[in-house]
Image (cartoon, rainbow, N blue to C red; front, top):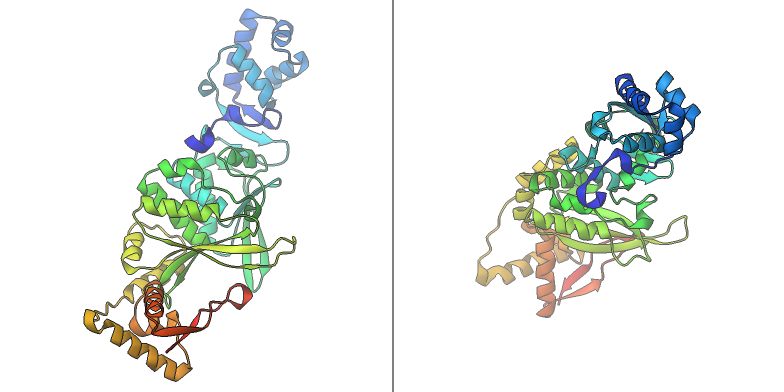
Length: 390
């Protein structure tokens, strides 16, 4: 299976939708083989194709449909690797010149390409698309496409949206069949709830880090105030949980990075089916420092924010016996100013990550030292829980 290997061969593509431009030297070798053993009519009858189509291809070196090409070389026991393919085309416009067959997605570029498809990319009946406002990510995607496919014909559209320019790269329509072979379903990810293809898990730490780097480039957000990296995906509410978030946690585990998963509310959609957001977070300085050493981000602003985040680290060593007293004192001070405190307030005051402060709040609630006056709000009213000292 391609989902297991990450490699897609020419002969696996839809036979009646792909057309090939074969190098004349290769065609002449096939022509000589047929001439020395058959008449064209007899050969055409044996493999059940039109003599007119066969003669037209052998004489004019015209395009040949994949199913006919396969019949010819399989009957003659010709190896695919011995045939020079100048270009691959689909029924519609668009082609790949000097295709890099078979198409190998187990490289660093392949890992990033798959991450793009699961991030800001889309795979639908109209083809393969990747949209972003960041030109570094757009140019990186194009570079990866050429490394994987060859000289692939690419078009770029530019659309103004909310004072930004969205750049959309599109590949030839038939490329959707290549990508679909890797286990990525055609259609909206929010409905399909796709998995990360299995072969990504077997690429080794270096290439897995490239995959995660691209996911963060596309879907990640870096909060200096909350001290975490967050990756978020939307999903229709009828799905139990995000497969991408689950799979990402497994990939982070391969890199020995600890993460947390949250479901953070839902929102309405024009389709009528509500959607909910799932997110995965890395919110420990130790984990962030381990991760940043292996990341290869293309998004310069996110890379800059990540460096600022790591440089903001200050370790406050609270004496064990006075830790509770210190926390309660900080909570009291914030409460006097605001009337309440949140985990974010405590994180800012102590220079610790939000996750650690949440754990402390849970501990103090169990000890009956504090109480919640307003629970965590989800959806459009998203807000942290508010607490007061008893």
